Length: 57
Image (cartoon, rainbow, N blue to C red; front, side, top):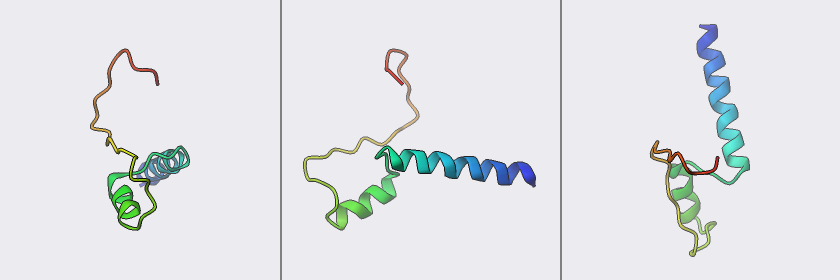
């Protein structure tokens, strides 16, 4: 039980960090785009789990 709560807390902290850095989940990005809050020139490339060894993280 405690492990589940700690895991949820960590997931929320990660989500907050991503939002602070301008990385949005696809569902939120779509809502923002439909509401007109996303610049037309902006492209969205959702993370698909692929990590390239030469990319800087």
